[in-house]
Length: 526
Image (cartoon, rainbow, N blue to C red; front, side, top):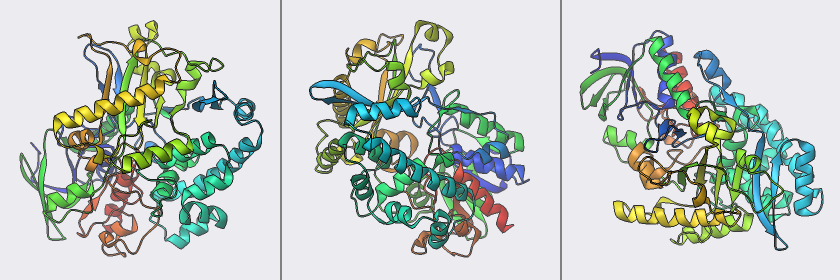
């Protein structure tokens, strides 16, 4: 039960963004209550012993860190660290009837050679360097603005200070610049994948949702690097919960919020343990859930488009491309069926209501970079984890019926693993570990599973379509554009109810940015 009847701030949802907001507000001397539906904090950023009797703590849902600002880690005194991956990516392919692939990472010389061997010249490598040099400069300029009040579109464009880059990434479909810059289908696909993580779109989607997804994937940390959380993703949210509690925030789990009432000045939050008053309510849940709690009309439906799979192996599988050590190939992002043409075909099949014949996906091995998530015995025996993220698996392909959802999930999982097997010298199934009950150590989640388990609308990992990181005066949900919540991108139509989750402007990913910005908006108004 909550200890008090009223608080300065009640935070609905104990995911990482809600914990960031709680820690900042409590450190500023505000009374803070966090209410979490589940029996633990963390939301999608958790570590779980997923397999019975197996000492392996996997990042069950979200799994890599890029967008978390070092500022938040410093401000909150978090005991948390990430580790760089030595390889960026490996993409297997078959050229002229022989297995080959593209290994990116391990130094410029090795990467240059890999491009030349795959494509027959240095043209694509030169284009790659130029393209990612441009995105690197963009990241350096845009990332620091994410923890500042929202800039206007014109102000962000001035910050970018490169009209060609602005036009290419903010105004034209990403496919145009990809096709102008690169010639090789596989190289084009590797570039495009960052635009399709959790985003169901084509390279030429006129809505530019693919551009927005790409932007958030290349600006993290001011470098675009995607790093491995030491101890798994739960290490971050455990550190955040500790920081919030140390600062004086109260966290109540197993407490589902069922309603929010507000007159714009004060609010009441009703949960299954009673009702508490609040000066402000910060909602670390999707806009769909906020509308439900307020008794208002829901926003347009959001839809996720991914399959998430966790595995534990007794060993890494051997590759058909014998030039590449599996430890190198799987330590970065291992792209499967993600050529440019393959991605378009998979999208068109899924959009027509058919499971993709060759589902695109990407895999990485957390334990190669951070073995601490495995028990000592598993490490000694050479066990490894694999995390797979499947693309173009929209929620519309699944049905709410539990049995039908499971059957569809099993079919797309089988097709995804079969596609991986075409690049392996041995079936992946031969490498899977088994749990204490003799079952293979593999679990999969469809978009509907993520909706049911985490409240992600349609399984959308961003809660709704991502927005460009500037103020959009046409967004009516921002309310009074002069208010602090609107200036920080966390406003709703109610002055004292703020979004602090992924559905806020500049939300999405494991970042803590919406939590930070919601807390700043509260403190600025007082």
